[in-house]
Amino acid sequence: MDTAADLARKAANLHAFIDQYVPQGRLTGALPDISADYVKLQEEVMWGGVWQVPGLDVTLRSIATIAAQCCNGWEFGLQHQIRVGLSLGMSPQKIKGIFLQLIFYAGIPATVSSLAQAQRVINEQPMWQAEDSDPLEADWLASVEEKLERARQIRRANWGQQASVDLGNTLSHELAPETAVLVEAYNFGEVWARGDLTPKERTVCILVALMCRGHMKQLREHIGYALELCLSRREICEVFSQAGWYRGWPYVEEALEQADAVFAEER
Image (cartoon, rainbow, N blue to C red; front, side):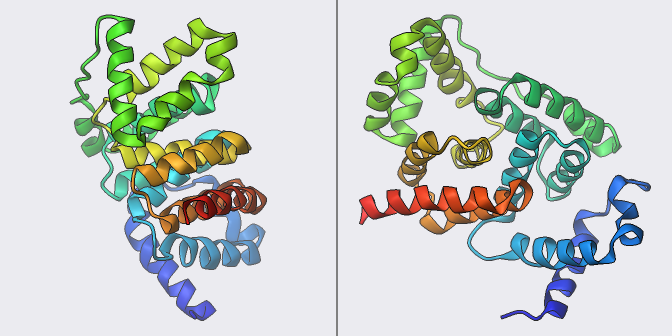
């Protein structure tokens, strides 16, 4: 097991890379003078520890963190994590793609605010601006019927045949069918068809949003879909523990309780 000194050294090595574009005078710059103990906890537990635990790719950790911060709505934290993602090599299109995916799970206010903050960060560096000037060309279909058909194909390909049955049996399809059809058509038939995020990355966004908003019944269902998509049990658990540092550990315990129940059904 690592010593505290090992964790501090790992944190310093990671900061040397991901903090290369951090502007002067950011809010957390005052923390050492306010509480050196807080900084020690943050550095050793978060940057030296959680961020570097084996079992989850660092890009997926970054996406999980950005998604959690979007759900939280804290401006300074989200902007910093967007810089981290861009420093790790994520494109501006991928960053924005996270918030397009989260429209359906975190809502309009959180995602509009997050997109605005993302643009501010992208505009900080000419190289990010240059990459942002070449937007993703999406293949928007002309009719809702076409979107629905593509949605069914994408859902089957990623989550299996049962996913279509589950979706058709939701209360939203029974009690608010017109809206449910629009959400299905545009979420799965358009957003999931985009090339800015991989299916695995989209699933991470969804798992994090459902955990952070406390939607445990739907989270359990999506853990099953994540397994269908070939996320490993370890990856799923690490997604929750990564996001939990930013949302709060009690959410992790509840999410892991759901995961354990799904894993038991798979044995």
